Image (cartoon, rainbow, N blue to C red; front, side):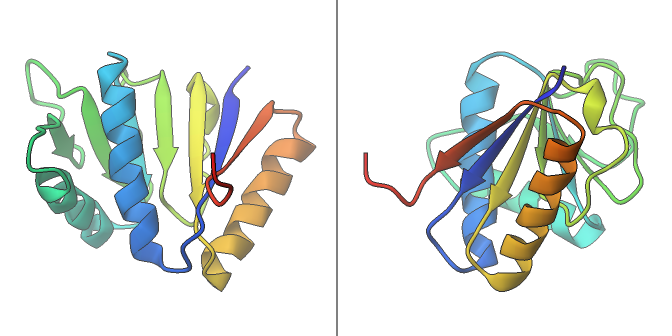
Length: 148
């Protein structure tokens, strides 16, 4: 069954979600698993694409954007948006940066939801939590607000 991890950030701005998303993608990439990241629209996917090139000067995260499936050797990180369906070879890690939960989420081994403290994101995070909980998915919370 799909494991769902919620990362609760201390910041109250949406940019914190994107920055944390990049760090999470970087960490997941180091594990060697293909990663699918879902956004609401092409503009957000492009924003994340640009952010992945610049968030750390010393790293390169091989990724592609959109539905281009003509690539012979697909990138290990794929950024999709809207009603796009992830490439077939992506089924390990799903990072959801969209406002909705795509219908295909359960094909992944792990789902990551990133929640910042701005009102809209927090409300959506609660809705997502209730959705997964009510369907019996194992939930894990990572409160990034607490000092370690």
